Image (cartoon, rainbow, N blue to C red; front, side, top):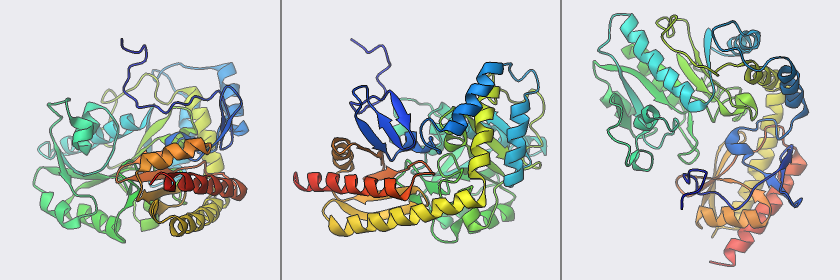
Length: 392
C-alpha cells in the first residue's frame, strides 16, 4: 500500500522536532550536528532569533495579500538585492526552480521583444541541476532527472560542464543564452576552470547572448562572496536565487538587468505566493545579516579552518576520502569509499551531511557556524571514517 506521503524520497530514518544554530534534536533529545543546513538553506542556522523575530512580527500583522497589491516588504527586499548586486529589478518566487523557470521565460521574452523570436535556444551544462519542473529537468538533461517524463521541453542544448569549446560549437543563429551554475552543487561540487566564467561572459557579449547564472546553491554568502560570480569579476544578465536567501523560509528570486527584463511587462508572468509579506520580511533580515563585509570575512575564516581540517582527514583516511573540493562553506569531499557509507556512518556519529554526484558528500553548514562547532564536526567525521574503514 502506498504511503500517505508520495514515496519520491529515499529518506534517512531520522526526524527532528527542534533545532538551534547548527544543531538538530530528535524527539528523544538526541542532538545531531547539522553540516547540511537543509541543503544550504538554513544560512543562519536553525531557529535564528533574528529571523524568528522578523517572521513572528510580520505574522502577527499580515500573512498574505497577493501580488494584486503593493507589498512593502517585497519592495524593501528588492531594494536590498539591487543595492548589493548587478541587478536593476527582481521577481520573487517561492522556490529555486520557479526562479530558474522565470529566468528562461525572461530570456525568451527578451528576444521576442527586440524582434528576434527565432532566438530561443539556451545552452546548458551536463551535470547541472536547476530544479524539478518539466522545464528545468529539460534544461539540465540527464537520465536520472528525465527518465519517464518525456517528451521534454524543447530548446536546450546540453554541453559538458567547463568546456568552453563545446559552448562555442553549440552557438547557432537560434541561440539566446548560456545558463549555468558557477559551481555544480548536486553535480558534485565541481568548479569551473580558472578564468572560464570570464571567458563565457566575453563569449556571450561577442554573440549577443544573455548570461544566466543559477546561484541557488552558491549564492547569499555560501562561497565567501555574496554571490559566487563575484570571484570571477563578472556580472550576469539574469540570476536565479533561492535556498539561503530565506534562511529556511521558502523564498526565491529572479534578478535581472533592466535590459534583460525589458519584455517582462504587466501580465507576462506572475505568482500567487511569491514575494509574500512573511517571506520577504525574513529575506530582509537575512540580507541585513549576510550582506556585510564583516559577515563574509568570517565565512572565509571559518571556511579556511574547515578546509584545513578536511585536508587532514583526507591524509589520515586515504581509503575513505580522496580529495576536498569547493569554495567557502560549499565543500565537497570526494570519497574513495561509497559516499552513502560515509553519510550513514555520520548518522551513527550524530553528524548530518548531504550526498552529491561523483561519489561526493557535501558539507554546507550554516554560514555563522563557529570554529568550535567546525572542530566538533571534524571529530565526528573522523569517527565516521574510522567506522567505514572497519567495514572495508
